[in-house]
Image (cartoon, rainbow, N blue to C red; front, top):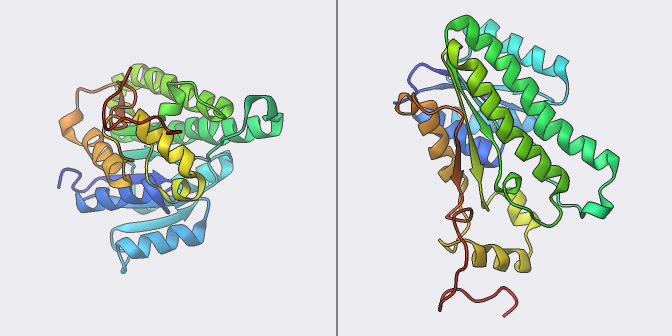
Length: 261
C-alpha cells in the first residue's frame, strides 16, 4: 500500500501502459482517475478495475486541447480536492520516414506527445503546489535517446519531454514536487502487436540483451516506485525500462543472430 490515500491521474489510461499503471496504482492504495481521449474506453477500463467505481473515476480528455485539460482538472479537484500523482502517458505513435514526414504529421505528433504532456503537467503541478507537493512521472521513450528509422517527429517529441522533465524537476523542487521520467523500450502493448511485423520483432530481439519485449506491468512497477516515498530523493531522472537496450553495444554469440539470418 505504498500509495495509500493518494489521488492519482493517469492519462492515456484506457489501455496499454496507462491501464497497467492505473491497475498498479489502485493495488497500492491510490484512488485513480483514468483519463483518455476515448471516453468509452476510459469508462470500460475503470469498471474493469473497480466495478462499483468506488476508487476509480473515468474522464475524457484531449491533451492537445487546453480547455479539455482544464475541464479534467476541475472535475478532479471538485471530486477529491487535490491531485497527488500524475502519470503523464497519453500520446500517439509515429513511424514515418523523415523525407515523407509532412508538417501536418509533425505538428500532430509534437502537439500531442510534447505540447500535450507539457499542458497536462503544468495543470497538474499547479494543483500540487496548492496542496503542498506531489509526484509527476512523464512517459518518455528510448526513441527520444537513440536515432531510429521513422522516428523524426516521435523521437523529437520524446527527447523534448526528457529535457522538459529536468526543467520541471529544477523549478518544482521548492514546491516539494518530484518529477521523473520512464523511457520504455520495446513493450508488448496492443499497439505493438498491431504495428510490429516479424522483421521489426527480430530486429528488437537482436538489440535487446534480455532478448524479449517488456510487458506493460513492468513499466507500471517502475511508475509505482517513482510515485512512492521510496523515490523521494530522485529528481529529474529518466529511468530506462528497456531490457538493456540503451546499455548495449556490440553483442554476439550463439543467442545473437542477425535479424536477416
